[in-house]
Length: 287
Image (cartoon, rainbow, N blue to C red; front, side, top):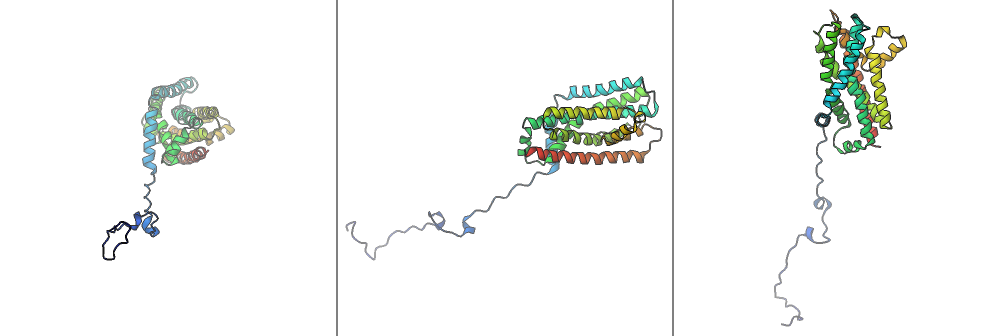
């Protein structure tokens, strides 16, 4: 048979069966052809993210730990030595020791954290954190906690030295376990907000220095010698309530309800300042 001859009716031909979904132009139902979308991973939770940021910040700042502790502690100890020639004892000595101890926290949590976030915003470092799947509050709290952790040894050394210098009892120094984190949260939130809201890093540094100077003048000096207007400004400073709570524990019979009330106010102010700092972080990250 020639190739051009028509096939006979009785001859069988091989026919291959191809599924319709592999034939070009094949039509299937939409629910059969389209693959199911992949499930997204769970959102990053606050506490694991906070721990990761805290450890990262702590390891990065580890090199500067010794100079940082030395400067903050030496400054507060020097202030107490100068005030020793002016203040003899009593309530004024209690205010000087408590204010000098909290000043260590202010130097790091307020001053240095304002500089850090100001430089981070100016250098574009916020873009790196914005790409990470971590909540904004974890970034602010992690950095604030890492910086505040450096203040613990200096604050304890300053408090012990001040008690020995002014003859104050050492029995209630355990209150620093509550004063350091609460005052640190309030001051760190304020410092982070100043650094994130400042349009330039130089202005953030200036605001941090002014805040630390306010903590020095309003926290270390005895309030009895201040004018009424200055006392009102002192009540607006977040660290004031930590200073007051610490100073009240030096008495022979501390007024513990007032101590707890001061700590509660300090904690509320700390929560508000950290919330403002988280808002400032979101605002700065999207610009």
